[in-house]
Length: 559
Image (cartoon, rainbow, N blue to C red):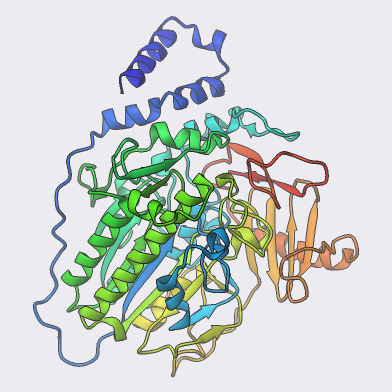
């Protein structure tokens, strides 16, 4: 902390002397300040973090009402989990050394949508899609909300390859405050729709859809909220005796997170405070308490874990249980996944203890694919690509729904399902209204699966967009266009689900047809509410720490 305040004083002195512009370019100055932890220090100065206080969750009725009631809904979203991080399909981390029986059970005891897709290839646009049932680009939410200091840190990282990271200093002056990078109040969230139906609505964990009070969960339909409004936080203090840390010196994102992220949560609009223990445990314990408080009324619980996103911090117990994994980074990450699986098992056991298991729809997904910046190779196997790419590895995610009272175990959802579909699916099971005054992109995924619900075919293809990088899946065909080693990637997913054979040059007419769909989708969309400040090359087949070699496929990701 003393080092941070010395850096703050030096920065102030340079500004006062008028020397900054002669010594640094603006982005370099911001990047230097971020590496000293100045953004985190200033944030804590503006909004001090208080000691923990227990949460008294609002109590529902003492007794359950007579007769049937709509099902409870629990949406569990984990952060940056790859499809191969689970053992469901015979994979798993470190060659299957980290069983995930509790998460796997959600798929086996309900419906597994084997072609589950993220709303986007990065965090907050995916979450905006889940909450609104609309492409976030329909309301200008195109990029993940990040502070300019974060963008500058990434944009001024040391180049490790032939294609530079670009930081758009010229756009920086037009950026809205990062606290206002969120879902506009004019959008209708699924929490608001369920609240109008009489549900108690609860948010725990990561929000990342606007930090300002008027964009926070309690302004967007949630009765109670406990978690992080920003994109993440520390899981434990760095020097905590129970934590095992894995830093990634090759990753500019990691270099920003460690000195700047707080170990803090916020309840409703109250002052930030320290959690208790590892954040994954803290969120689970509070989710269990919130369920008990609301067991006698319908509730919607949005449980958004920030694990296993970086910074990588595992409990010592989970780390020591995986002594067979030799690579330290993989072992810490794997320990975080092990902890997630165990605590989700605790949550499911609690539903049974409270007699709520039969009438609770539990949905599990990840916000996007596994990240290239961990340095771990197998997150998304057998699919190519990572988070921040529109290859299957970046946007194909686990999507499971378990509801003993409505879904037969062992059901397979054959058609593609999307984060967009959370809205219509939850509205259908709850009897809530779907907005009719705007374009909705959501369908009820349980149509044709739950008795009495008619199947609902998807009326249009699925689209993804971030700046000039865009993609569409229409039937079995998928086209991605953008800057990189290729201008177009065309795949027949029925014949080539792992996207090994690019057919763009062999089928120019199909490329033109699918490109026309993308152009038609984008024709009437508004401009982004904030610009993309960083353009970074992401390779498709190797992680960030692998050396650049000729012939590697790569794209430019704008954020």
